[in-house]
Length: 518
Image 1: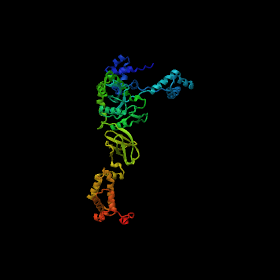
Image 2: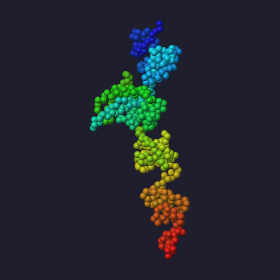
Image 3: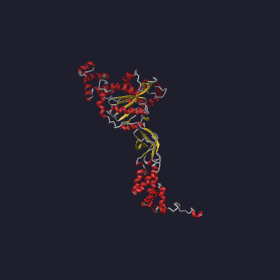
């Protein structure tokens, strides 16, 4: 008769006694296992080079495979092969409302009369369902992931005026390797509160893990998917600022963030219990009370080993990426259309920001905070400016303008005076006086540009004389310069230009003259 296999409790008892320094003879007496069998098991264990702590973490199945070897494969019978092929469809049918294992067996046996009886059918089905629900053990690398979630049970603050109890949310984050935990209370789970909680969590850790693992809350994920979730743009911008990745769990798969799920349960037991009967009149007061409780929680030893804080200091602190020089600032989002002058308007400030001229008429996404304004087209950033809150002003980058716009954008009071002085100080003075006669200097820019253009048509010497003559008249406009040049009046002296009666009557065939009336 073959030897009966030992239970895993016996094997664990042998290994535990071995770590305590007991000999094989003593272990044989304590466990009732033959001494040669004890020696055989210990020899196989030593070949694995595992420590006591690592053995304690192994499941019975994994330990059995290490000590006893993998189970030998079993040959399936014909009817077992048939049932195995049917099990995926049968398990799917079982999810239907009102369906039972008995009804499924009746349908099965009607098609396969030589099949299994009810008890064996149900045993195979249960085994298949259990295999599908097996969980995977993840080895979390230092600095790799932080798992985040909100506790299901809220805490409360009290309105000091009305006495109303206001529920607040509790944000929880857990580093995968050390299980070092962060928590805080916030008023809501909205993206503003959620993003700020993530920022404070990273500052608490003093570094950034390579990935953040949230569930599918709207503040993190715009549209959930098993294969390609669409992230909330604000949270995506947050991740980009900190140089980390966002790895949302699949919908309805809480096991993928079991660490934080377990941490939430421990938070109920070891933190909530100490403050549930206390009254807090502000969110700040509640968070101040949570800080020492969180510190005590992280200092608590894990099953006789190091505490979360000690594991964090030893394993994970140095593995985190460095925090950026500046903390993330929440970006507001709006959609805008690029105007024909190559600018978009930030309505909140009534200020205008330039965009490359190729995007005129396109709808763009504008992200802005207290410091900067970023403009995106189809997820590509096409412009970035320092935020300016001056109303009805323009922030313009010369690179964004077309060639014709760049010329116009350079116009200013100093520009025209300087260009006029290049011809002559008289031309520069004339254009300065022209702009000063206007309520706003900008109203004279086109006239000054026209005067400079006349220099190309009439020549600089004639323009200088025309400006001198117009200044003598005390008239500062573009039309007077044009009129003087078209009639060649710049070369005449005032006496030659005007008749004795000082009449400035121009020559025209429609004008009869004074002789007509005599």
